[in-house]
Length: 316
Ligand code: FUB
Image (cartoon, rainbow, N blue to C red):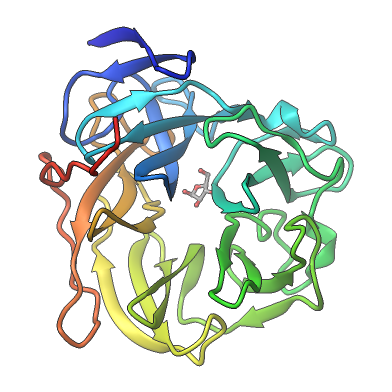
C-alpha cells in the first residue's frame, strides 16, 4: 500500500498510494489541523493507538502529511510527540499550526505532568514537517488558569488565527470556549483570557476568514455535529451560520479544520469509517467545502471519494 520515495529536499517520506477517504488507511488518525504553505497543503493529525475494544484514547504523537492536489498524500512521519514537551506526561490530543516570520508554530494539547489536567504547549520549527521543539519550556495554558468548569480537560483543542493586521488569537476549550490574544512572538498570551458563550459548545473551535467574513466553527452537542458562527471580526459578535456536518455514527467526536487551497475550500474532519474503527480508533477525511452567494457555508456530506483532484501549480 505504501511506496517509499525520497523527496527532492532529501527527507525520507512515503506516498499514500490510494486516494479517497479516509486519507490515511494504515493507521488510525484524529483531530486534523491544516496549513497551506507554498502551494502545498499540510495535514497534521493525532495518531490513535488504542487497541480494538480500548476504552480510552491512546495518543502519543502527531503525524504530518502533505498534498499538492488534495488526492495524493505524502507521509512525512511524526514531527513530534508529547515527549517534545518535557513538562508533559502524555495525551497528544488536538493541535493547530500557523506560520509566522518564516517559522511554524504548533499548538498542542497534552496532559501536564505536575499541574493536574490538560494543558496547551507550543512548539516551533523552521519546516512544516518538523522536527518541532518546545518554544517555551513550559505550558502556554494550564488547567489552573481557567476556572469556569471543574473538569480537567476544559483547556484543550487550541485553534490559532493571525488576522490581517498581524494580531494573533488563540481559541481553545471544552465545555466553555476561551480565547486570548497572543504576542507577536506567538509564545505568550497578550492580555486576559475571555470566554465566549456558545450554544451547546463541546470543543474543537476553529477560526478562519474567507472573503472578509470570520467563521468560528466548533463541535456542538455530544455526539458532536459541526456548526459555524459568522461575524465581522475575529472576536465576533457571532451569528449562527448553521450545521456544516452532521454527527458521526460510530464515534462521538468529529473535529474539523477548514482551509482555502488553490482556489477552493476544504474541510478536514474525522470519523470511524476505517475498518476496525471506533470511538478511540478514528480516521481523518477531507471534503470540498462550498459557500453560498451570501457567504453562508453550505452543509457538507461525508463521502468515500473525497474531493476532486485540484493540482496546485508548481507544487511537486
Ligand atoms: O482526540 C482527543 C480529543 O477528542 C480531542 O482533543 C477532541 O477534539 C476530540 O476529538
